[in-house]
Amino acid sequence: MDEDLIQAKTEDELLEEAKQQLRDQQFPARLLRKGGVFYTLLALFFRALAALYGLLPVIVQQMFVHSATGKWLDVAAREYGVFRKQATKTTGKITFTRTDTSQRITIPAGSIFSTDPDLEGNERRYYLTENVVMAVGVAEAEGPIEAENAGAAYNAASGTIRNLLTFIPYVSVENRDDWLEREGTDEETDEDLRARTLNRWEQLSTGGIRDYYRSLVESINGVVAVHIEDDHPRGEGTADIIISSVAGVPSDSIVQEAQQLIDEKGSIIGDIRAFAAEPVEIDVHVVLYYDPEYTTPEAVEAEATLRIQETFRYGASNLNDGILRVDPRYPFDSSMLYSNLRNASNVVRVDVLQPVGSVTITRRQVAVLGTVQIDVQEADRI
Image 1 (tube, helix red, strand yellow):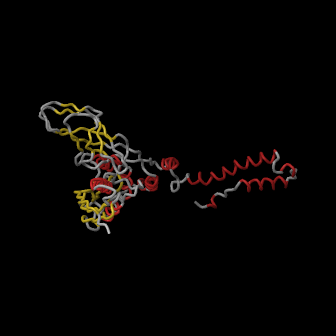
Image 2 (cartoon, rainbow, N blue to C red):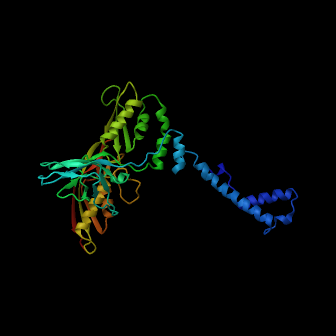
């Protein structure tokens, strides 16, 4: 912010100005000597006034959308009719399986499931929200679950929720492909809220401009990227809106919510459709060389698996944990895998055999993790 906007003054400057004005008015000089009662009271007053001068630039900065932060930005955005997206909980379904089907089993609501610990040692817990009954002869059943806390970290990869913390004999659990029903989200960052607020004017238009629809769909919780194809992809008067979410491929509920917004607030003469980004599976094959004096191959493989899964985690680019993650706006490059795996504990060399180089991802697609093969070998010593 321009420092000339507000001329801040120090305590000494304010005190000298006041003393000069008092001298001009023939004020007794002996009362302006240091240590006197009047001088002390005057100094205390201008110390407080100088603090207010120092606060003014901060207040002015928080008055404008371009520079406001935190709660101040919430207030500024509210003037535009834009509100910060709040953190939400992940919801989905868990699959129960068993081999002995001779008895009827009821899995009570409130049963707890978890993932294995992540790179920081944190496990994610989920709760069953409804009773699930496995009748005699039934070997498999599904039940709705909800994350313990809000946040995008609970959008676990398929096959990773596999620990049953509530004792239920002879039953195994797993979150399979398409287990997500609604992605969990983190609270919207200042940068994202500021961008949406500055784009708010686009929603005031009445035509079918692309920025209008982008601003409209970006207001949905869980949406991280929106691509507009308005060159009549399905014929005259059509446009496609491609959505990527914090989970990469958005859930059906996000796409349905986007379509509902488009139908309610979009063009009445155009055929505007919302689509989920198409998944492009990236198969991974790496060879890791480790120092056998400090670790075991099992530990190396376990950490590498977590790092590869984190590489394909969307909506977590602001964690600042040293992990490079996919971004739906850019191609996927194997150098991300190399960097993430090279930083694994006691790994001295990484060979990425697959994928090779960059993988072209169109704007209608998002990269998702395919098959993973990790070969672990002892590093040669010189």
